[in-house]
Image (cartoon, rainbow, N blue to C red):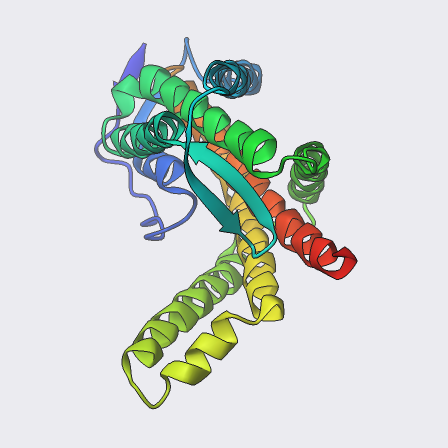
Length: 284
């Protein structure tokens, strides 16, 4: 039977303990003695979202084949060295799917009861976008997608080992480091924006932002932040199971984990694209 304990006195959770999905779980007060969340249940639901991501990849490959004969609308260059052609239909589809993924993400954050649906749709949309980047943007360098996948698995496994072994815990010191990195990243972004608006500093900001080493450093910092968020996610999932949250919260926990894992994958893929683009330029 599910119960609500309004008289429980708990330490107020940090404003941003984990990703936006799992952060909501820190405020759950429901408990059950019968149908409680389990690690295996969360793992199965996480696998379901990952399968949905794979479905999104397959859908993109089918769409890419169907639109292969469409007239070229735009030729786009990213990271200065990866050039790809895009038809108007392809641009409309990938743009619409990217927006749909963002909408599903926001709905999942604010309406938890529909996460089984919105989370699945979000995963499909992200799979489509990932496949577009790997098989459309990175033509000739598709192997980077597999490399990013293997590195993502390695990062997730390493973070899980660090957490399960007790070497890294989501404590006060950990959150201080995490928040400092986040604030540092936000601070650099804000200062760059302000500097770009001031005529005197604008050339220096443009030079800094155009420096590949600076961009790579920001990507590495973003990857570190994403990996640290994974530790926080594991802590919230652990609390969800140990404190007997109702089974319906397994969907929340699973989607939160997938959200962070996809974030890590995209950060790693972005880094690999930058390195490959730099090497491509040297070879040319």
